[in-house]
Length: 601
Image (cartoon, rainbow, N blue to C red):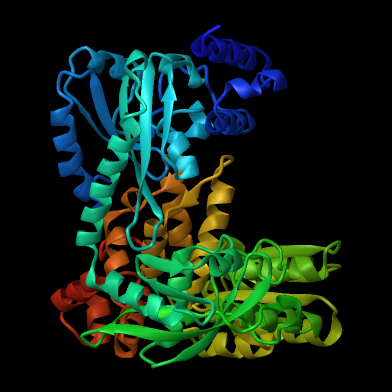
């Protein structure tokens, strides 16, 4: 019995029974056997007649720029030989296709082996694109070694393309031909092609990447230190550091390091990992012409458990905010807010939560109250409703809510008229003295303080005023918040690419979490698997390359956003408040990547 027939018989059994018979395993090449096992475990849809479509992809990448001339030349050499060439990204999504053979083209078209379609192993099973993306190693898959029936007529030789500096997988190059044309000589040919592409990637490498690489090599040479070189689009580390960091995203590490340095020659900070461990790090900048292009990060200090750690860790790891129900965040600012909220409730005192629109005031209050009174009665009042337009009806609703309740949350305190605010101040003072009911209010304010004297008096009666920082002031929390939004928005798992995450972290978010949630839910509706930077609005994409703002620019941006909120988005009034012309205001908003016509305010 021939090898082809033997593989064909094993394949038929596997497809009908869903398992690989142990006596037949020796028939399969080890790399094919491993791929079949992964495909079965992941539930690959091998019965699909064609590759699934994932949408238009970014072809303006460094990978395409490096690969296009090399693969175009290869395709020219293959003319008349019945072969085509595919370029895919690291997720096995096809970016480009070169096919000159008129007989092979309809075969590839019937399989939808073209740009925008996915060859992911976990979706369509063993193949010369997805299996390479999964293992990072070259492979040749011939005929019945494919699990997907419509791939059986093909032989596919796939080779990985690694970044020449970081050695991260950048993409996959695959030659497809008829199964009967398979040859062991094709693999070394394709290895040579991949090497040419990697050489071009090295030539395209930026000065920043080379400086980070040089600094890393110098620091790690012969002394056994755990170090990493990090930059905006680069992360270089040995296996000990990558194992330590686990799934912590590279862009999270870079943003944490960048903020910690802030123009200093050395900084000490911490990373909070997904498993709760705290990693102390020492950062030193890598500069070019007076500008920081990267940093050298030393991980030599001992790792400690977060349960024994006294200081809040500055990190954006996706962890629950000290188990407060429904909330995430690990920045120092957010942890302090959560602690203050808990202290107020534990002391039995009322509190007023303030901050810009969309920062999560209600979510914080509800989360803290739910934690404090898990089986208690918590009632919510909205002071922006008609019942709160007059003092009489407002106090009637307040009395009904506080009667027998463990806690009451009053939203939109800023919407009360001065008369209602005065009436509530008096009634709340009585509640504080005579009742165990905890009353928490939320007040939306650009400057974090009440707008009128009556509201100021009411705020004083509430007691502790807890201000939640704007999202732009605690950008470390954005990755964790974004992931929770995506989980809530979709039943299937979505992830953010490093490029998309970089854009989100650097965006100014005048609408705060409210704006971030609306954007991600909109994007998630059309995304499949991974959200790329190209899926985001252009003004958010542009933030990826935005330089770090100076302290003065942060003050200016805050003043502009405060003025827009005070004027309810009216640009003429806002310009007068800030003391600039309307055209200057528009120019400033544009420079900070903020759409002046968007309804954030």
